[in-house]
Length: 87
Image 1 (cartoon, one colour):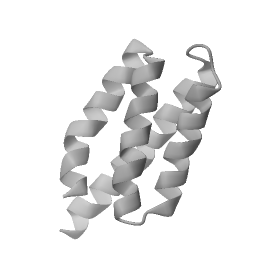
Image 2 (cartoon, one colour):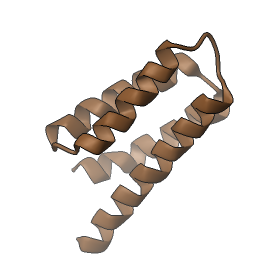
Image 3 (cartoon, helix red, strand yellow):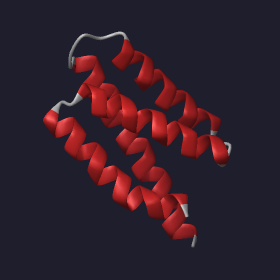
Image 4 (cartoon, one colour):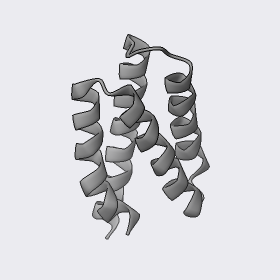
C-alpha cells in the first residue's frame, strides 16, 4: 500500500523540488515520515525528520535543502522499486 502511494508522492516531491517550495517540502517530509512510522522504517523516518529540521532552520531554499530532498527522493525510489521487484 505504501509503495503504491509513493507512485503518487514521488512525482509530487519532484514538483516541489522543481518549484523550490520550502513550506511544501516541509509538509511533504512530515507526512512521509508519518507514513513510514506506521511501517516502522526508522531510517527513512530519520531522513524525513532531518529534512524537516533543515527546512525549519532555513529562511529559504538552499543547495543543502535541494541535496537532502533529492537524496530522500532517490532513497524512496529504491524502496519503491525493491518492493515492486519482490512483489
